[in-house]
Amino acid sequence: MTKAQAKLQELIDKTVSIEVGAADLHNLDVNIDAFRVGEYVRVISKPHRFR
Image (cartoon, rainbow, N blue to C red; front, side):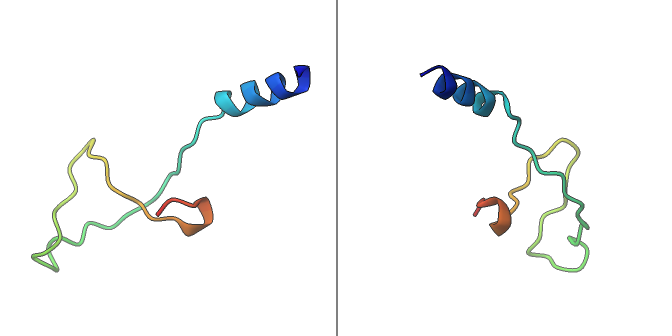
């Protein structure tokens, strides 16, 4: 039980973040919106199981 609680606390304390670079292509395609500062953008990363 002690080991399980320690493992659970370890998992809770982890921060999940992904840093990405991006090119704003809105000038090339009218169907793409421009990025705005502070805006959240959906990122698809199969290795991180985010789809």
